[in-house]
Amino acid sequence: MGAVHATRGVLAPASKDLRSEVAIVCGLAHRTLGNRVPIAWEAMANDYRVIREHIAHVIPGCQDYNAKIANPAGFFLPHAPRDERRFETETKKARFSVNEIQTIQVPPGRLLLQTVRSHDQFNTTIYSNEDRYRGIHDSRRVVLVNPQDLAELGLADGDHVDVFGEWTDDVERCLRDYRLVAYPTSRQCAAAYFPEANVLIPLESVAEGSNTPTSKSVIIRLERHVAAPTSASSPLPV
Image 1 (tube, helix red, strand yellow):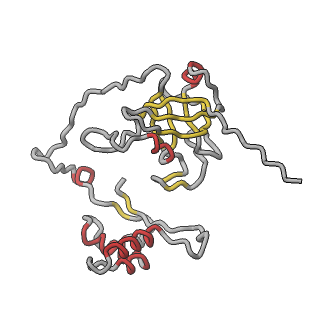
Image 2 (tube, rainbow, N blue to C red; image 1 turned 120 degrees about the vertical axis):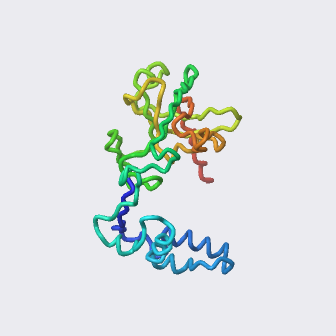
Image 3 (cartoon, rainbow, N blue to C red; image 1 turned 135 degrees about the vertical axis):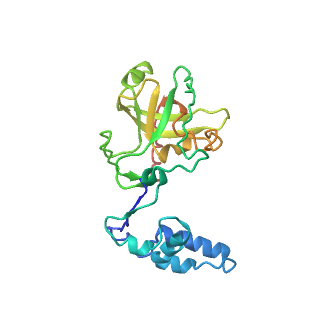
């Protein structure tokens, strides 16, 4: 952790009109702020070295960023406990805290969902539908559930379900037509991929202190998916 490496795209753009994420963000900033803020948005969009120069001015350890990043091995950001066994505390020692484990009570017929990333994924960037970590292939529309829980719910591996998130309000949060995968998770637990399952997490459901979304503690229920009937095409007039 704390290692910085250069990344370079290896695929040709899908279109000559396709813009990079940096170009989109800089374009939004330029359109929104205009010349009121003395920042060269267009220069940063056209040359990432300009961005690195700005980073070098504010992030410790990033001095001479453009020169350092030329090294294929990258470089490490400074980390006082690791590098010097130094802790920036009043006692100059590491501080540990003890917290009681809070057990979430899952109602009968419900499961506790956690969102996870696949092998071929970096944050919200998804490179393929392959997940060799868990043996999932060709799809991300899956929910991993303990086989015993599936049996108790009257469901089976391969069944298609709708996944409903349950919260204290009356808002319906649902993933439609997801395939069940029997998987050795803990009992009364389930897992689905992030960010697809983000829709199940209320914006106001956050952890105390960190204010992060409760992506590992979502109470859900599963209902067998019923495909919508397809209307027969009207006959042509004669």
